[in-house]
Amino acid sequence: MTELLVKGDHQRAVEALRRSYEAIPQGTPVRLAKKTSNLFRWRDPSEAPGLDVSGFDKVLSVDPETRTAQVQGMTTYEDLVDATLPHGLMPSVVPQLKTITLGGAVTGLGIESTSFRLGLPHEAVLEMEVLTGDGQIVTATPDNEHKDLFFGFPNSYGTLGYSLRLKIQLIEVKPYVRVRHLRFDDAGECARTLAEITERGTYDGETVDFMDGTVFSGNEQYITLGFFTDEAPYTSDYTGQEIYYKSIQRRSVDFLTVRDYIWRWDTDWFWCSGAFGVQNPTVRRLWPDKAKRSDVYRKMVAYDRRFQIIARVERWRGLRPREDVIQDIEVPVERLPEFLEFFHDKVGMSPIWLCPLRAKENWPLYPLEPGRTYVNVGFWGTVRIPMGQIPEYHNRLIERKVAALDGHKSLYSTSFYSREEFWRHYDGETYRRLKDAYDPAKRLLDLYDKCVGGR
View (spheres, helix red, strand yellow):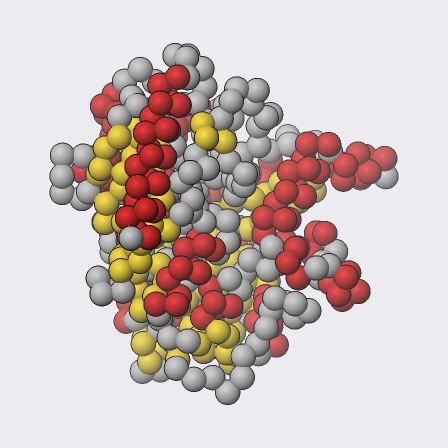
């Protein structure tokens, strides 16, 4: 009965959203009214009313027998994990931050330490219900009349439509994760090991369930392996005083509950909490545990971005301005050492996150070669702009280097491609065909205009 009520609520929300969408005048920008965001494409707040999607934040059902879940598009992974773990299940790929939504991870891409064997979050989607740009509600699957939308939706960033409901595949879990941190002094050896484990799926004869990596310098990098286990001699807690990323350098073996493993990066927003003093032991004791979350830090960054508090202080002190260097990129695993050498030399920011992945299918708007091993490289911070250089100096360097290495970059942050170059990287021909089919009146923004033009 409860499930029927929830599904009834979903249908009422769909109809209300359809009416709300139809009521927006033609020519008025359509945006979502969201409480949280994990994007770093900053723009001035819009005065136009946002499309209210607050009724689409629920887990509709979890089916332990088929290992599937029906989930609304604005549901956060935090809520989804809370719904699935009691059944001994989790989403196949859980992006690192709690407030990333299912719809956001599918339309904007996501990644985590199961991606070396299970691909990206959208590769677990079995069907999706989408409000398209022309105001229609369609259900897209890999083999129905809307399969072109199904495969073209990832990396479209809400410019073809909004996902209202998704049916996703889940995987079985065990209560604990045993973690091993392997140190490498050489980036080439690190890259080769990432490639070998991705290819075999094992290390020292054991099946590997999770794999990511952390680079602290050119001669100190780690691959972190995770193995599901039924028992643990102890469990570490990185939600209070202890800091997960610092443990990588101090421990070779560790144990976490599966929930704490899933959210190991969220407590300190990887390592970015240090910018707010939260890694100082005294500050950390005073900082409430419930506020040690990525969304809290993200709001603080947005506030500073709006009022330029740090920039004003640094100008008063006579310091050169800083550039936000907040990116996730993918390069083929064999090109990883070359990218890291470039990054250490030209950017010089650390730590750096590594996450190997293999796409299982061809997703045209983010064309990774299926079956080929790539490594996601994530770096999030600020760097002082060299004397005489333009404000986007480092980001433009990175963008050119990634293209030269046959890689791609995620579009959640700043991009500087020319229109021609952008569509060469992100399959403009397919996008235009999808746009004409599902948003012929161009009510939603164009992907280039949204992700590069900053609209």
